[in-house]
Length: 379
Image 1: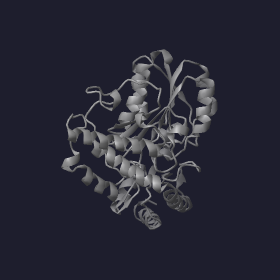
Image 2 (image 1 turned 90 degrees about the vertical axis):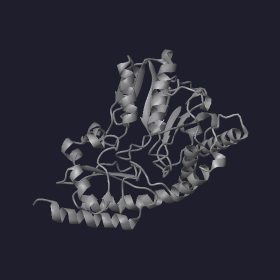
Image 3 (image 1 turned 45 degrees about the horizontal axis):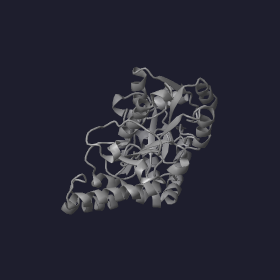
Image 4 (image 1 turned 90 degrees about the horizontal axis):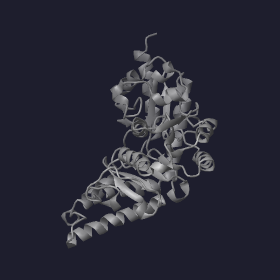
């Protein structure tokens, strides 16, 4: 099997599997909210995981909150900030190439009387700076929402330039950043990054599904999305799970230690595939400076879903659009917003890699693409 769909989800690493077994032992399974000794031990374990996670991300422990996923984190950050800070402004700035978790949250705000201003996106997948400046100049901007690495193209946000522009033209604007596809693939230090709120996902870095992170910079106030027992400093109610938090931490430790090695390996795979696919008439849609973990390519003569299922015959797994939109069988809204023509976008397939992928797999992929064209393309 060749698995090139790691932007959708990754397989659970062996070290995470082992850690899960350790964390589910009876002696560690008490409710952290209980007053007895086992409860206190469980709370100590949980807070220790929180502290270590914060350290790896360059944050303070009190700025880190465990969630069920990045979608929950995005909803909490976006809705929670606007709900809590009504006097900060009525407008939110973003782009139309964001993940659905952001876009749907923004639509929710729009339906509740907030103004959403969308910055234009270029063919390179980056916000058009003149458009950003124009939207900021209109004033009343409480929140700006961006993605560090686009999940469909790998386009990397020029965050230093974007953040500098936002803060210079609208100093009070708070910035939310989707860091899901960047985690473990490029260095992230939240203390110096410049974002006020960030979301992360465990199952994108070889943890299990069901664990994410919300970072909220100290001093930023938001309303919780989930209320109840007031756990996690009132930010997210619900019994704390050292199992899920520990799984996230174990995966984070692994990817944090191997960023350079993983990037080097994946860069070679990406460069090889770009060269070989271009030679075969395919159109590379990921920008030249995209993070190499994602390669979006349009195959001449094959619609996206057709190519996906042809590859599946050979036990090769890719995706068409974001997994959150795949069942709708629509052309990628990200590519269309970038200015890619609809016919080319309709043939687009996303290859996404992890540090475990190999050059042998890339060479096998090219071999099978050749076979698919020989067998299935009507000449």
